[in-house]
Amino acid sequence: MTEKKRFVCVNCGHRVKELFKKYSNTLKTTHCDKCHQITDKYIEFEEFIILIDALLLDSCAFRHIIYNGDFKITFL
Image (cartoon, rainbow, N blue to C red; front, side):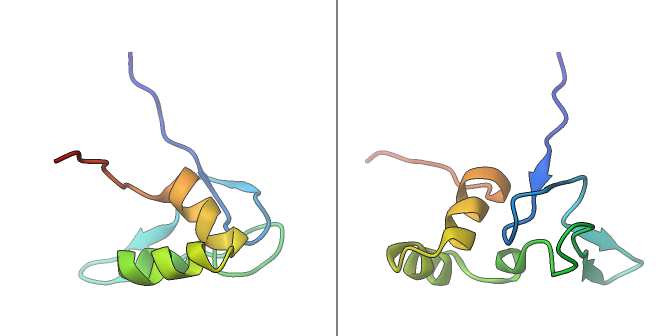
């Protein structure tokens, strides 16, 4: 059973099919069809910056973590 992952725009929450487009050796972020902003600016950030934004209660950071992030929880 294969499940296709759906992404969301971190600004408005609208569903999008991709966060970036890959050309020969470059990646270009996509824009949301609804709000016309960059779909997910956090794909270019390090995890520490995303964590700081989440601690500052930024809703965009939370949307990235929940829907678009690929975080793995590890226990010691």
